[in-house]
Length: 212
Image 1 (cartoon, one colour):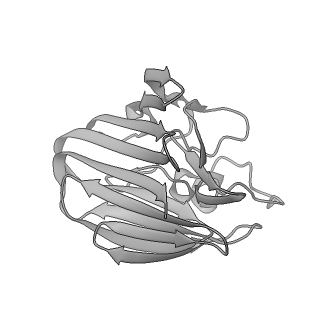
Image 2: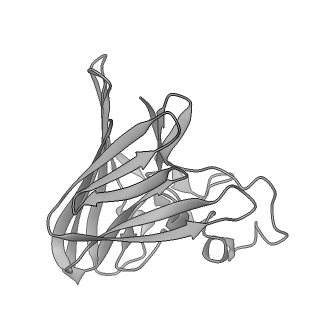
Image 3: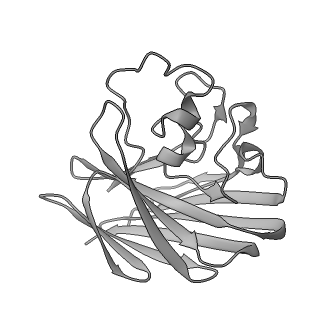
């Protein structure tokens, strides 16, 4: 297993409003995370409204949260603030504050913590925690080109010709799944939404990914 994760801000060159995005690779296949692309650009791809028009360019098409129905904002004020960064031979921990990325008036705080454990075949977890002034809707997402299936209420299975990966889901409440195929001048991929069924003032969703 190999992983990458990013912070930054939403005014960077070729940015896709995707602070907190990541990628997970088994063998030579990206099993989940940022899908890259497109391979060619529509004429208005760099216009100000492109992140809303083309889901591959906005945060909806990336493995980042959707907060009370709102995607990440564009601009330098939308940034990931590093809270913790610890890298060792056994485990990496990278935590960022994503609050400023969302123009959601009722959001007080949103953090995302990545933990990459190297023991055995490896394990990668993504933990989102939020607090809000009033109960809000909250979801995160997995983006993938693999064949995928729902094993049960808290597990997904992603498969390719040579690899299998299980995603275990822990959350502050019951979750439901949504899915949408996204394709913009690049190979189609699926956005799997992992949605808290009930609105809440505080909550979390933790995804843990490991080879099967």
